[in-house]
Length: 316
Image (tube, rainbow, N blue to C red):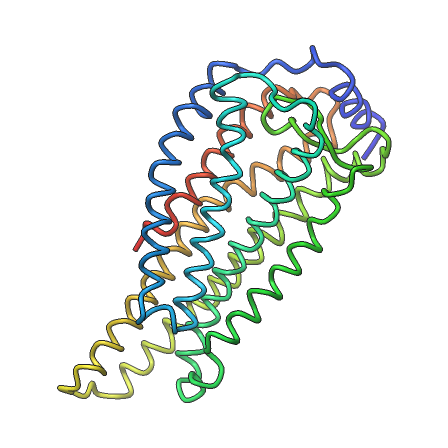
């Protein structure tokens, strides 16, 4: 990062008049767009919670993991209600007396939930891969207890990765009321300021989008190859066992749900990741970057991200 990019960050931080995004666009996205997303998101995720709490699904590792995905998606939407009120309804900063604390909670929560939701999908893909690759080890490996352990381990990693945003010395209110810039690094630590706006987006995207997408893609391809190989090697056996047919149908539906969720996750997060990496590079490399254009682009990107958490569980 050179002196010109340092000037960009300092100017943006110290000059409120420097920031004037398209107010009409923000109102449309954050009032009407988020209202629609909340409607389909909360109803869809609540229906998923009820579905995966059924006696048949709640005892399986895959069902438990899908339940956790629905929980994380619903929590993400709940945290986003603040932006809906601040940007879409009030159109100005709220809770200014505690804005720094609210910022730390919101941004840590969003990053943590995004991390957990992405890696829960990875755990589902691994769970389905283990069932296809090692069918005789399913009862030993693919248990609800093991799924709970992996969920707890993933949560600990998520806290460790995003814990820096809970520091009152490093993180707080930046431009209250302005989406994407409402919260950020504090001026007291210029090293962290530079890290947060130019390096942290790439680190976060790598662990929340790129690596999970690659692992899910690799697992899905390998599962397809295993199933295709088994179909060619073994002739199907006709059975009248109702329980066996029901279990087979359940596992097939779980696999289809995993694939549809993975496709939606990949199609929404990869374009977002590319956009955020480009914006981080532009801020780091160019003094002439239009910060208002970045804010407008990030507003659209954030709406797409909200759509991912609203519809992921509706794909079943």
